[in-house]
Image 1: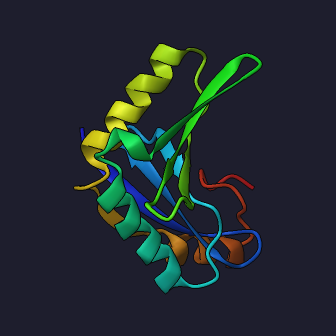
Image 2: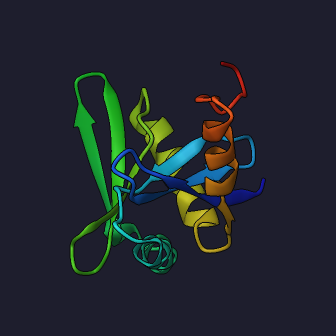
Length: 127
């Protein structure tokens, strides 16, 4: 399975990244960064901290389980996908630990900007 970091423009015109699996499942998503450089620094921080369990916080709310990855300064780098069970969450954490260091970076902004200019708003090219 291959994984990638996808760069996207956020609703506030900032930048976010998503760590996705080869089958397009979102494992981790960042908050919005004001600059592209800040977003790329967030990816590097994720690569640096993701292999170590001490940088993961596990969250249980109502009927879903999620997690976040923090940097050594205690700032959240990214929020994990919601899971239906603690075991499913641990599987997602295992995938982040395995792939975050080696995932390639893909800039999706040019494609999204083109689609917006053409009047498309969804990623599957439907109007």
